[in-house]
Image (tube, rainbow, N blue to C red):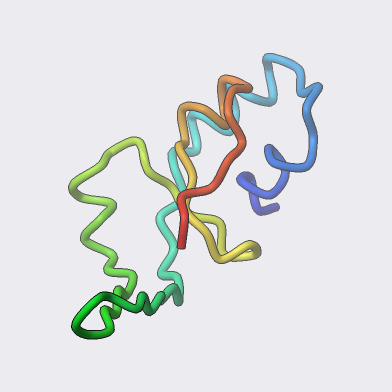
Length: 85
């Protein structure tokens, strides 16, 4: 089971299941995320780097959705927005 996808698709999850997911720990999969922005003088390219998990211990990833989320927010039932990619 992909715990992040489960949390994102189910709003009314009982406390015991949320506790189990929390005990499993935040998933930190390798993702393929890149974005190119057009600037005034040149184009900028940003790519996902797995070191982001080391810098932000609340960040988790969902390989099914290929996106990053706040682990605490998902487990506690808060904001379900992803980080812009």
